[in-house]
Image 1 (tube, protein in one colour):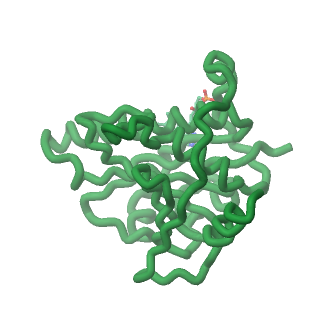
Image 2 (image 1 turned 90 degrees about the vertical axis):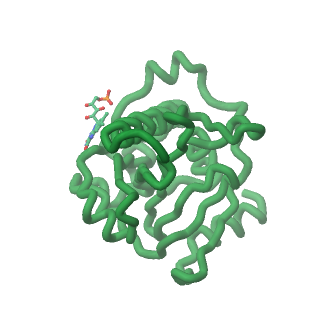
Image 3 (image 1 turned 60 degrees about the horizontal axis):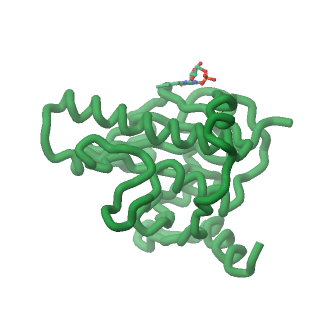
Length: 212
Ligand SMILES: Cc1cc2nc3c(=O)[nH]c(=O)nc-3n(C[C@H](O)[C@H](O)[C@H](O)COP(=O)(O)O)c2cc1C
């Protein structure tokens, strides 16, 4: 690990962040050349609910978030996951032992929004409170500027599903364990994260290394 990366990792793990002083943590440049062949990845994709305690190194987290919904065409700002009307209304939040971070795909960075560990509030399954990362896919309906309420929630569910599948495929390639979770107490999470009424938690997804 380089000195710069160590500093970034230390920043990521820093706890002394106040609500007014949002930290922006740049992520290492994603490695977009690696990974297993697609057909092998599809063969290996699966849900896993047995995780080890090993944490996810920052370069791996960086690649994972880019795979999820990073910008893959700088000229248009479009992403690895398709998005209905290109609303890009799904925000990916990363909940860890050290707090909650929002992935900013444009800047390929993390914004720390909380220092509290809310992992156990993201689900009732036993692994949830200890898995290193629980991703939350949160629809920001302020970005969905037309269509009926039914259309908006249908598209948000579809858009979150694409991001989730990208994470599944990255995990299969990288040897990570993951499971997407619809069973989430959305009100509890919204309260814990102080979400606006027009933000809605769609899905959660746990990610870590498989239990040996
Ligand atoms: C929308 C959605 C919601 C899900 N919710 C949960 C959940 O709350 N908890 C869980 O353990 N698995 C959940 N799963 C994972 C499914 O149980 C899993 O995908 C299914 O059993 C097939 O297994 P596979 O992913 O290994 O092919 C969910 C999957 C989807 C697509």
